Image: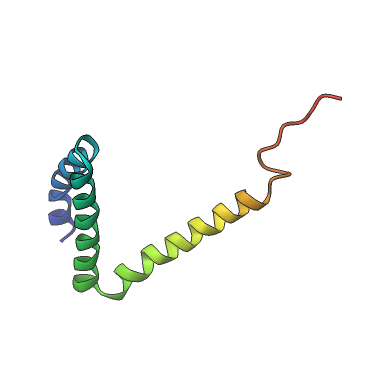
Length: 81
């Protein structure tokens, strides 16, 4: 089944290229296609297809909060005295 999924990568790349080069309608339809692909993954695989992206988003948001709130230690320059 994994090999069959790899066969669809050129199709997704073509859709992404078209969305990047196209107008607003093609960009919106690309997002609709991605949502339909995710919904079909939830339908075929089940709960893991729903929970894994949610866990990744939660981790990414946690990293964003750390970078946003730790302004005195991460991206500061030392001033010469």
